[in-house]
Image 1 (cartoon, rainbow, N blue to C red):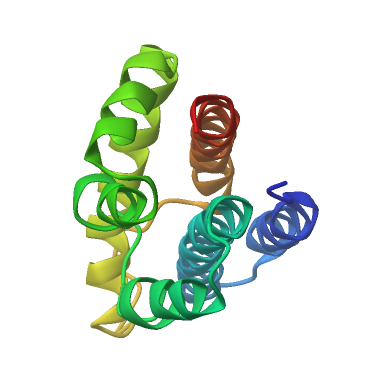
Image 2: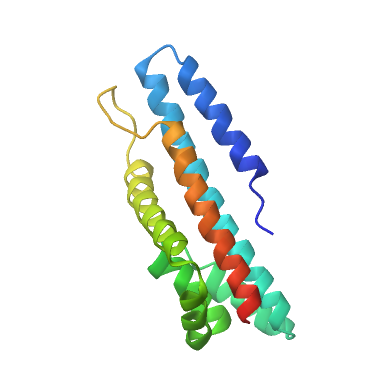
Length: 166
């Protein structure tokens, strides 16, 4: 099961600090940390889901280790088509991924993909720069919390359908 307790607490704490910040630069720091925290949680949650899928269906320790080393460890992102879907294909095969994608709630899937795409672009921008002044525009932690809700709903939908399909 994908846990949301810690990430929710972290994002809420960052939102409180954002609202109490004394300078615009502090607001930028809290905003940046919130986005990076959420993106880290997404990567770990996707990895966890796929580990549980493979543990359920694979009996060979050698294959489980190969999946860990060749797929999970070599993945460096959380976007839908290039990261999550690609790992899912490795875990359950393209035929099953097609079945899964047809059975997930299409509105949740669309919101999930859109949020992952937006977060991927934002995360890459934030991870490869630093805050120079106060002119930067970064979504407030409250926006990141709203994105989290859509991402969480999407990953839970995939989790449910994956375990019903395979």
